[in-house]
Image (tube, rainbow, N blue to C red; front, side):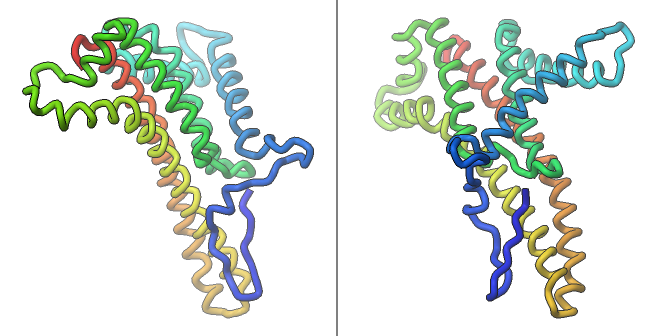
Length: 260
């Protein structure tokens, strides 16, 4: 929920403190709003796709069409076109990843919920670790541990002298940079987007209740800009779910390649 910031000195802009939400119940310290939203997202995704597939027909209903459309998008555009012929065994993970991230992102603009769970960096970290272990596991299983690590540290076809510079970069890229950038990109976009919405919506509310007439005049402009940003944030939320899943598929495809 959006909290209003007022003080005797004027408007207090939103900050990182607005993301540190207290426990819902005092005796259950871990049960905060972001945790509750994550559980809610699992229920929403499960119920939606269960209902969309329950009465499958040749001529699909609107719900079935929506469910099949999302599944086909992930299956064809994010799995088959990126990974290749061995893509089907990764579809369940990519599909779960995409729908989970997308739902939690969209919670940021849903009335009464109004908080993107992925703006808490711990959740993107965990998802990135899942992707990290999966693409390394499939690479090791296909190539063998020795060859897999050798191809990472010593890229084939490169002059030996270059390895002095290239090997540390490649090792850092595969084992540190990839999971960090994968998680931080999602976190930063959700955090910044929610913060911007707070600034304009709360700022508009403050100006609306201000005693100065000129402040009341500018309040509708702040609200309008907040509404425009909400539509923009919707596009960013969808895009970030797509990018997170796409990069995961690309990493898996790279791990399955003969040379990576």
